[in-house]
Image (cartoon, rainbow, N blue to C red):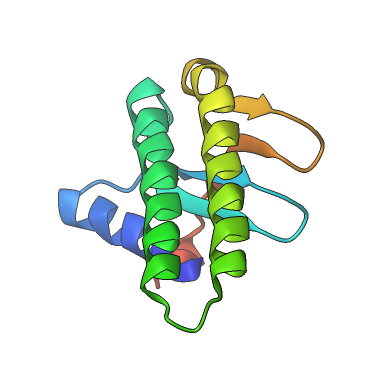
Length: 124
């Protein structure tokens, strides 16, 4: 997580500006699994980018599963259904998240944006 934040901060420094905040976008799939990225702005465009990131991350995990020769057919079929369900969750929350910056299916499955203040120590 810190490397993502450092990457966002490096981008800011390269642009010659130093904003006070970055935005952490998080997709919480369940109590144990989440995906997050940092953005310099919170708007519909960056929330759309995050939605696309989630889709690609899920597709990448699914393709990694198919390339793994150690998985049994039953395991692959089960996990394939899990990936489909995850894609369904992402799609169900897409519009609310892109327009409002938050969406939830239940207490464990949600997408949010959190504004994080950058302090001077982060830049040193």
